[in-house]
Length: 386
Image (tube, rainbow, N blue to C red; front, side, top):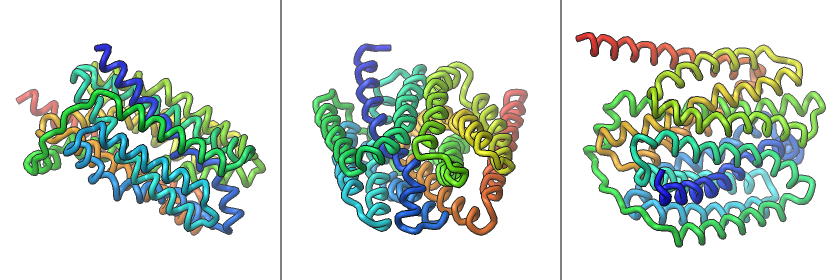
């Protein structure tokens, strides 16, 4: 891999590491906020889902900014906005202000991610794109891994000081990014957008970001609350998600390399089959240790959909003539739909019918997606035979 690409990969990985850490820092704090602000499972789900709502609002505009003004400017602008959101989170004193800060975090995050991933996709050779994206996403997962630990530590040392410190660090990264070598702006084309959305594989790549976001959205609401009901501490809950994330950190670069060699379909089908089993097992689980183990299994199965899905989205954007920045912006919006609906609908269904129902619905979605990929394999085989 070229030296310049390696340096860019290191910078981008560090940036999205911090971004992802802030995204998951709320996880172990949910029970405390639910008690402090008298939130139901639905209310907790809305708080978690506010990030997804902001990401949905910012996804396409962030992608347009990355394409029109260049990835570097989108990354710097997203980081500045993320720092402001962190300061707002530190100062929040109600569920409404917390939700507003989370919404701004989500909006800024999609702008940063669209710019960062487009920066990598344009700079890296196409034959290495899956590995590069997988490595960057592995760094993001590592940030997501440390996020719950950061949230647990923040509760011990002071939430306000902790989030102010992270906001300052984010501004430092924005300064570093502003001095990096920029990638050129891309050509935006309505024809490229139309061609991409007529491509089933491009749309499939988007869905492979929506689905795991929905599944994880349910998991980060229901699993911490279930463990809290069994007497687990905030720090103990954080350790569970730490263990789960460490597995995913190692998994994603490997998935990227596999996707480069054999294509994204095989790892996607394996992950979907495993997700059906894990989601169904979560629906039946009642013992806290079993739930903790299944959270780790979900990191492998649910998380195994992301890297192949992102690589597929990027490759099909090339084929359709769609700018990479806009492609990743659209992908961020697809992710945001899952991140917003997963915790909110999952919390609502759990409140009304118990935790098993949302997990079973997740298993059903994975099963239907697996069937759809089987149909795609059949159509492709017939095409080759003809």
